[in-house]
Image (cartoon, rainbow, N blue to C red; front, side, top):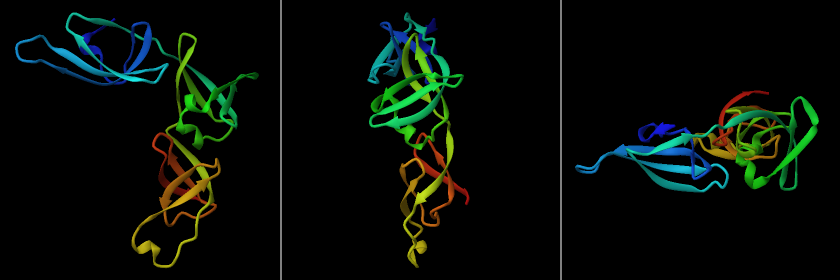
Length: 188
């Protein structure tokens, strides 16, 4: 059980039988009253964000979020298919809206973590950075580099992103999976 002031960012709690992730927390005191912890919570099953204030007398249960490794196999229409790394015959899929935007940067056979609360999937943990080959990049026009701009490129997974003008087709680049931003060029 967590005290009211132990409900801080990145903690998982159970409120009304539902798992929540604490997005923000702020302990403050109004005039002569007792302190209050004003939090912003994200429901891990529905994805809805709500605000809740914990008072001094309140305690809340810490959620046990389990993690298991799964292997990304392929995508088909609006579904992403996975299997257990040790048993490829046990396949399962998730809808596009449940999986998140980070999947567009993952190649088949990538291992990710599935976060679970009981038998319900609450989310996924992706690698922080990936290295992908640039498949399409518009050519540079002489004089473009003086402004230090960006261009839209396509990587081997089919995802598009902004990259500096010096990135060319065939280059291997490093991408931040969470933000979808170009980080650096690694080579050819």
